[in-house]
Length: 125
Ligand code: SF4
Image (cartoon, rainbow, N blue to C red):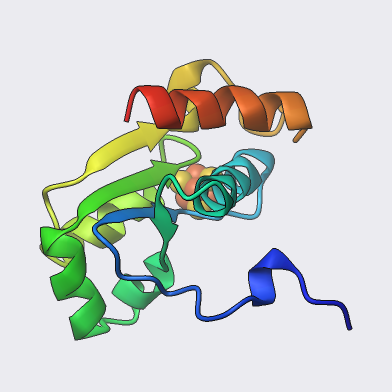
């Protein structure tokens, strides 16, 4: 098996600038995931795991409370936002893909879409 970016080292980075994504199964969830990974690959933010918050992993939750955290949700169901708020994480930057005009279930996950959302994430957040 070849080594991909997803397999290089531990991905649960705990640097100061962190991105987490809802990584949902729909097109917009996929966009959140790919944009978060692109931010990591380009060393803009370190990617960490939203699932760790859902699993009540205390060190991750505490680290997120003090980090410069960006959460990317795909749609207005706001899964990531609800998970963070349930864990008492209230201080974070927030990006929702539908707010950028994309429609859930009708957005082809193309390089162009990823690039546009990525640029927003780097410039505005
Ligand atoms: S926020 Fe929307 S896209 Fe993301 S996991 Fe929830 S339902 Fe899916």
